[in-house]
Length: 336
Image (cartoon, rainbow, N blue to C red; front, side, top):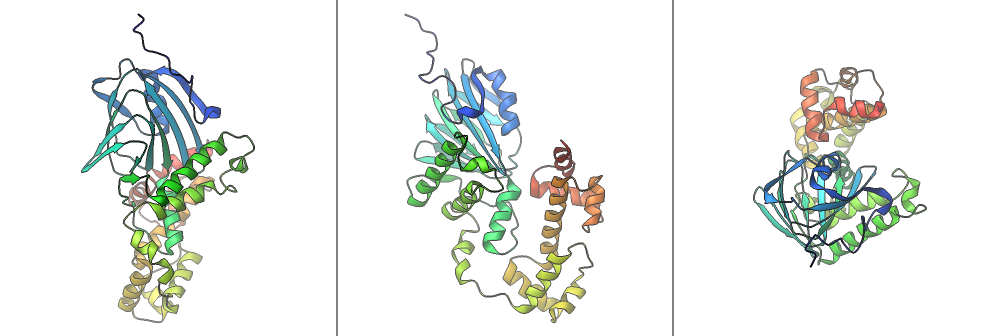
């Protein structure tokens, strides 16, 4: 009797077939490819030596979808660096035991998981495990939440790690993700219009933020009952948004608002969730990021100074905390 590893019933990826990266690949070939799409990992206590993998991946604006199917052996692995993005893991077959800090998850067809920035998980994949990763860039999801809340968000967003796919809202959401995957495999689907025009990215992020509990869920639920911002706060926000690189001292903001500095700080935090200084910093970071993506400057320092960051090393640290990469990496990517 032939005891060699049986070939899977379906050759190659069964999802995202238009975007196949590897078929029946060994672990040493899988690792560098997976590291480019998600995070670097390494095997831990045995296993994985006889494992083969099918891999497919596609980027769509701030979203990336990675399909992986492993067979021939179990695999225990650890991520070698902290995650800098939001990673939703959806098990399609088999199981995956995930540990990250105090979180302990068993991913099955009824339970998915979400890794938030700064987590560094370990995983144990069963033989015959297949999964869909949905990667959402941190800056995009946090900015999307800011748009929904109408206020500044100090990230990262802290999601409940376990995603209960039996709950109606999350069952609908994951069904929409599968529709998105099917649409990507169609040459003339909605995704063919690109991430700028297609509704997929916005729909996926909105649905996740509404359906999966996180540390801003209560504010989202109360959003429809939020009090109207007073005119003093609106004047300050308008001034900041109009030209965040300008002189935005507390004294000037208070003069524009027509109230005292302490009164402005209390009212501003009440209605935006941030101090004026935090709000200014967030807007400036967003403007720098937009210019870096557009390649609108010769150096990172030029762009940072343009938007009011006079201490470039401190700016670089703030930028990396928010966007997960150094500003120089964003500028290089725009030129590439």
